[in-house]
Image (cartoon, rainbow, N blue to C red; front, side, top):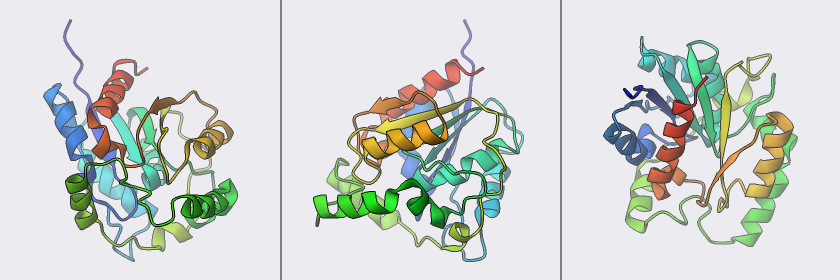
Amino acid sequence: MEMTVATFVLIHGGGDVGWYWHLVERELRQRGHDTLAPDLPCDDDSAGLREYADTVVNAIGDRRSLVVAAQSFGGFTAPLVAARVPVETLVLVAGMIPAPGEAPNDWPANTGFDEVMRQQAQRYAGQDLIYHDVPPALAEQARRHARDQSDTPGQASWPLDAWPSVPTRFVLCTEDRFFPPGFMRRVVADRLGIVLDEIAAGHAVALSHPKELADLLVRYSATAG
């Protein structure tokens, strides 16, 4: 049976770059799929979430068989993309889940993350919350790639009035120190009401466990629709 070739559109988190996904891209391409991981204009104070979505949609062009996967703050952009182009599956990877009309800056208070973050900062005082399970040399590369994150996209209300009618999956990282699993399970249940999948990894799962994440993404593509 001929394999269906998918295009995996990979959206990075806040203050990051498309490079974050490079190991997952390699895994997906080795399996015959196409990948895109554009750099969002996150250090541009003139760019908001609409411009983030424009960047991704322009990168997609006329490609089809789309699986859109978003990391962390990318969860605010991915549904905007899915509302504009024909996406087969939407995947949030340790992703923020916006509510209609919610500004990203309000998300921590609305979800209780502000209190969770205080607790995590105390629990892991002086320790890395993002790259703790990433090989040290790779973690250092990731830090060098980091960019400033403008506050502009955090200020405006999320523009959709409902979650797009696209099959949605959530990848929970059970060793995540930034979005701890108990917190994320509650947010997923409250805001999406879907069954989630788990990987024993920290927040930067695309760097620490790229093969396992690619396995999940390919599985989602194979069962799309």
